Image (tube, rainbow, N blue to C red; front, side):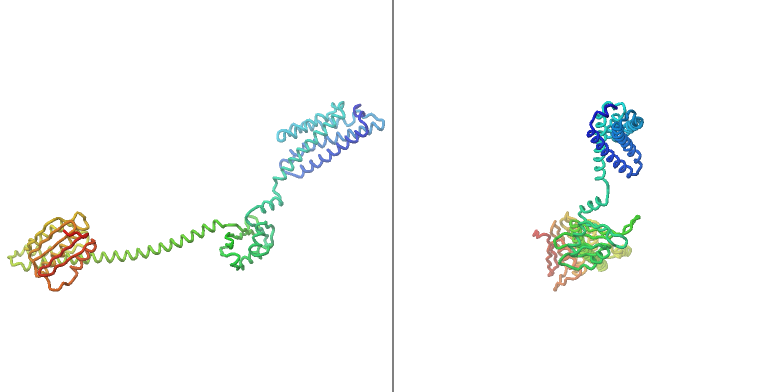
Length: 462
């Protein structure tokens, strides 16, 4: 304790004032920690209480010991027990706090050690060390508090964050009065309507009544408006009623320029696609009608050819002067009266061979040279033309001899019939002409004194 009387009065006053400053700062730190009541409040408060006890005991020791010295009393054993208890508590609390705050815990532990009565022989250096350690700890605590306050969510931080958003936001209470409006929404109001609104209902009514094509084009949607400004940008304004325990309204204004451009492009493409689909449907209907008409013509021609052939065969059979066997005649007539095949006909070569054999059995002198074309389409057409020509030669020309010459791209048919004075394109000749035209060829007809057909495909002149 003799070291306590070594400093001058001014030095003691300075030490006491420093101790009081640290005491006030430590009290404020304790109050700040106590105000943050959560599950960590005890852990945060114990180091502050220990530090406050140390600095309080040190202040009382310096001021009270000097006072006793001035009064002529010995400061020996002045609050020694209290200082010992406060120092031990600070040491223990500091060691405990080092687990989560190492630097602050270490400073508190060191301050507790320097505040032990055993270090009084180093006064006032030990007292200065205690105050310096506690002051350093308070500075670390202050820096931590500032960092923590910066990361805290407050009304000001929320407003600042909303003002940084590119989208406009208006939060309104149940009575539609504005609780929070960010800068982007105010700028949007000024740009679109020329004024700012603090009531969500009034703002929505103004949007509903907006009609200024010179400023922006408006398109209404469900609880939303799309505005296309003349500058080229597009904004979507939406209104949502808050739910989930919240009451009030939220109105947002979002820039959707790129999305709107894509939407318009998709609408244009959808319209073009719809028009194309409609055109395709019309073409399909027309194609169906054309195909139906073509099929009907094909069936008609086939029926005409088959029936004409059978009639000519029947006529030749009945008019033949050769003696007739009754049973054979009945069999032949019965085969001629069979149903007309409307489905797929036999192979053209088979059909031609059957026709040649049948007509020869009926007494027709048939001369056949060449082979049907390798192309199946031309082969079927040539077989049908031969069938129709044989029928016309026997039935109408009363011919008993027919000469048929076949090439890959040419068909020539001549008979010895009576021919005709005036050529009349009936169903048979019309069908023959149509088949030749379908193959891209031309048909030459000689009708007197005998009948002759010359079909040439692809301009061949053989």
